[in-house]
Length: 115
Image (cartoon, rainbow, N blue to C red; front, side, top):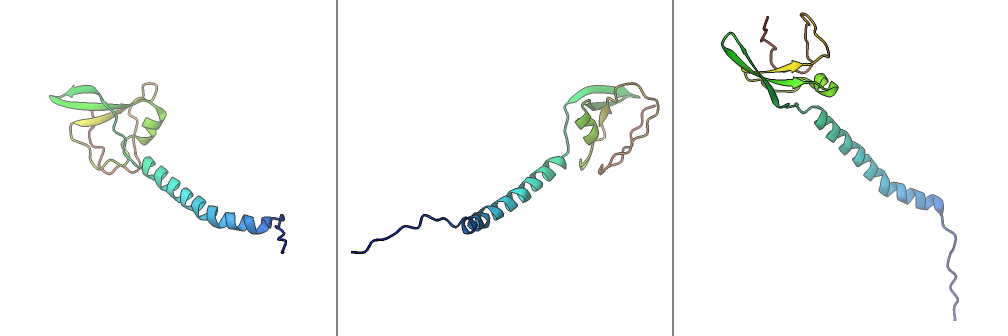
């Protein structure tokens, strides 16, 4: 009759390497996926509800209003077009006179100027 002894000693180093071989690629793919999702969300254009109707010189404009800091920051970024009767108001917190605007990643000219 043979007596078998079980090995109660665990090789923690080998077990850790096996775990890293499994968890490492999963963690790497998770980081890549997370980065892609965040990048996609950040580069989507915002569409705010039309809140105002402005009539000037017999032209009617329908306007979105950017009030929150994240709405102000995004503005019209990444929009492919803006209909000729649409626009966006920027609530900067107080009245300013003749504020120049430049927006990063706006693909169409900001051409409407109302004196």
